[in-house]
Length: 63
Image (tube, rainbow, N blue to C red; front, side):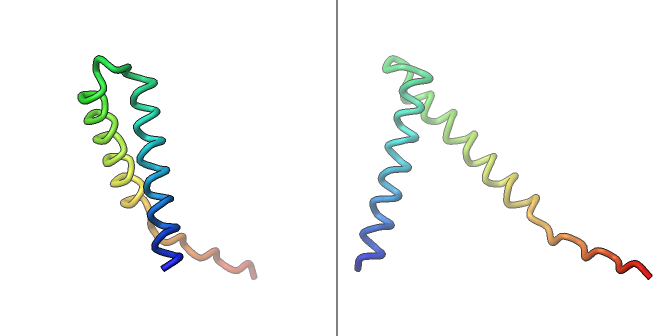
């Protein structure tokens, strides 16, 4: 149960940090559209970071 509570607080912290960054960048007058724009940027970054994850080749041994 403690793990679930810790995960909840972590997710809540990330969400409110994201909201603060959007509020700082776009202000109160453009918060909703700024939230959508930044959320799309985060989704694209996550997709790009996930697709680049390929196994590293093993180095060849010197003889």
